[in-house]
Image 1 (tube, rainbow, N blue to C red):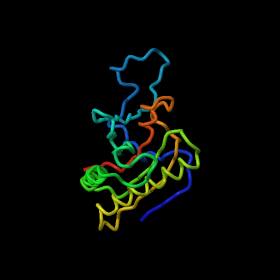
Image 2 (cartoon, rainbow, N blue to C red):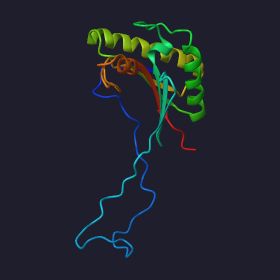
Image 3 (spheres, rainbow, N blue to C red):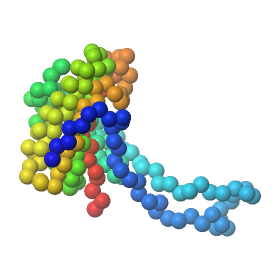
Image 4 (cartoon, rainbow, N blue to C red):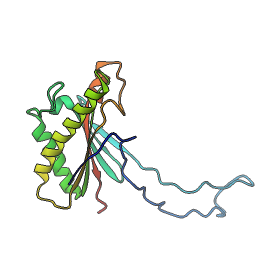
Length: 184
């Protein structure tokens, strides 16, 4: 199933954080609090691991709940195009293999551009690029009837680098593929 949605306020992040692993007794004699002090409620922080290849063409971010692949558009598309380039198939197949390993049932494919050109052009281009990546992923992952996709273009919203430099703009021109990490 494909869900193409209008622009949203922010790219959704994976839902849920794990519960605290242990209960802390604020009255335990080993805690050394100043008189009148109390402990804040326990909170588990999500550790994020990011691995980027040496030339920055591909990046993988892992948290305890999700995996995100960020593919620079120059790797999978020609400049200002939504037609998949010659290196796209192998890169997207590798992502599909990881989706299968994680047994993911929901996959988000989001397209982004730099801030050059009009917002309308960037929105259309980012959406077409996300749809092209979705089509290849859907083909590589068929026939899983329980798998759903959310596909959206965000144009220049949510940059990951400074658009003032060509290197920064290159990093912002990307397609992100996010899916839940398996729990077992």
